[in-house]
Length: 420
Ligand code: NAD
Image (cartoon, rainbow, N blue to C red; front, side):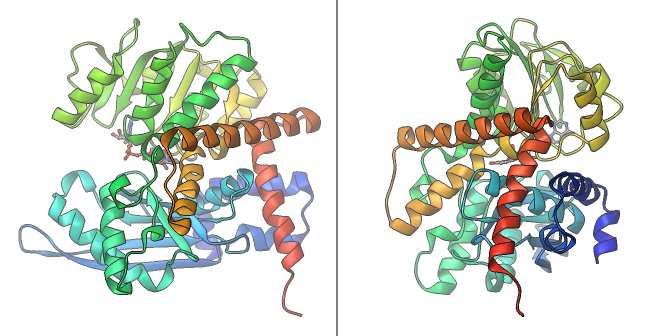
């Protein structure tokens, strides 16, 4: 199983990042092994009746990386590339992210190998309900709490609440986060990840002495995270010049009207064909001059093929794992890009998910203002801890963020010990 995971390119990347950090921290072999490997890998098959009457069987995975610091927490992804190795990598990154943010969670991730864009709402509902039913024995408010990720949304979470609660015989809102507000979701959760990305990008601009007003940004991915990050950057005076999604890429030197583009996407399903910007090659878009580059879609899009050609001042990693280790080395060597590593940059989502869970367990409802103020305080704390560590130990921002996260986990493992 270990070999199989290591052969997966995304898990291989997460494992290499971990090994580098473990070497730097001089972790003992025992602690290193206990931190590195996932505790539970669960795969279930999901027979679903499709609209044309066929039965299709989908494979779904849930990986719970470790349970030492509390219940596990992490998103559920629907995408045609999902496999066990990718899910395990994302679970490992969630681990370090929760620990960096000092949230009382271990990391987890789930994914179903499917193409949600090619499925009807009825098929997606059937798939989600079947998954919720199959995974019920392995989750719980105190065990594993899911949230939306790529290809899933508030509606997906609502179906999971319904299946789990129907089985329990009473409403269990804390079984997932990122639910609709009407179903005890949190104010501000929908916007939280993008809000955090924009907040940290502006803190980074401030650190490098670059005025926010009039800066330019490029955003790859116009889903939940990309839309809210772009929106919030533009509200603060940043010109969002380039935006792409799976249907194409757009450019407007004067800044794209993010609200109008949102309307266009709602009615057409993608950014392509928006007539207030020019079409641009999606790979070329990433290389245009800008102050802030926000990859908010997939893993491994900043590679050794394009890292040397980036013309941004801040690289705000809204997606998980957008930068390969080879590209990281190039960015380190260049020294002119302020990196906001994924486990910090997109931590707004899990932080407000934590707030949602706390509200659910305490049967309490906070205002959006309370939520976003608390979020900014927590992000600011982690941002400063990362900068302090990086400066003191003369390491990259990614190494600093990972070290802080891995340290929290390693200490808990040491304190809890093993059976004699
Ligand atoms: P989403 O499904 O809402 O949006 C994904 C976007 O990426 C869509 O606009 C899609 O068209 C675009 N996309 C897909 N393939 C693309 C390609 N090849 N080129 C350009 N764009 C492409 O997903 P999301 O929730 O916004 O998640 C985006 C990223 O952020 C993922 O890496 C996810 O793991 C990460 N993330 C999400 C959250 C969250 O709260 N949703 C939290 C932390 C991290």
